[in-house]
Image 1 (cartoon, rainbow, N blue to C red):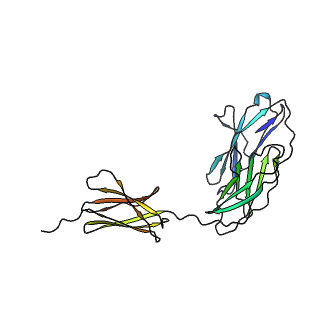
Image 2: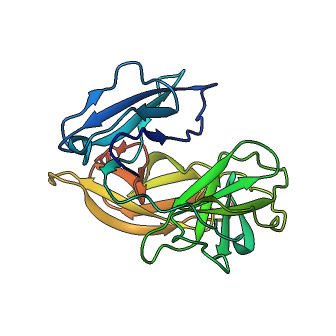
Image 3: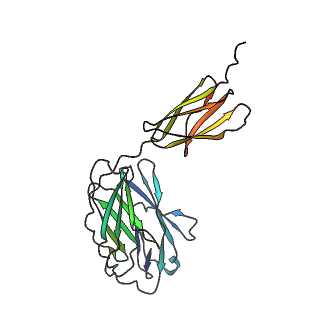
Amino acid sequence: SVTVTPGSNATFSVTGYPGIGPSITYQWQRSTDGSTWSNVAGAQTSTLTIPSVTPSDSGMQVRVLAADGYGNDDTSATATLTVSSTPTPTPGDTPSAPREPRATAGPSSATVTWAAPSSSGSFPVTTYQVRNDRDSVTCLLTVTVGTPLECTLAGLTRGLPYRFSVRALNGAGWGPWSGWTNAVTPTPPAPPITITIVGFRQGRHAVVNGSTTGLAGGQVQAMVKVTGQRNYVAGAIRPVDDEGDFRWRRSTPKRVSIYFTSGRVASNRVTIPARAPSAG
């Protein structure tokens, strides 16, 4: 947000960080009520300047719609123009560097934590930025009451070591970067969870053999429907062995329809025929 005196130019700026696209395009928008927005003609760079503002411009809100070359887009937070006869404060000191940055590796990511700067400068700290020492992947944290001082950088290359540093922003600008964190190496993403089953009859028993990925050492829940039932009901919980396999068996002569779940993941459904009547 910007506060200026009447007759001054009001300048807003935005920093965009590309997703998968090679570049970012911008479109500034303005509103007088915060709900109805219109494009500002010709305002398609990262900076918007409103010349020679008047008191009637006070309260105007602006925002930016940003897009990359692959159809991904995002809208910035809203900034407000205040036109005041009171001169704006003279920019003062920026924050000192954040302290004690630490990094922890995650699946193709890393989480960085830090302590607040020893001095916030002339204004409160509003934002932190985390960078790494390999590429342009960064992370922004907007400060609110009770905000944990941590940020997760996703999309890192697993198997490569990374270090990170942090800087803080206040009304006077960005402060210096902190020192680098410990080096961490992102881990591979967790394997997808799948459940596949086959069913067959073994005399008086209905039998299911199951195989899974991502569930070794876990468990699965049977969902069963036998002849005469309208809906599936929860059955036995079966353990998954270290190879990712499990087995289910029930003594019943009836036809059985069954599938297995783990959280939101469900297997295919199989129907085991009724036991054939004995001859004679």
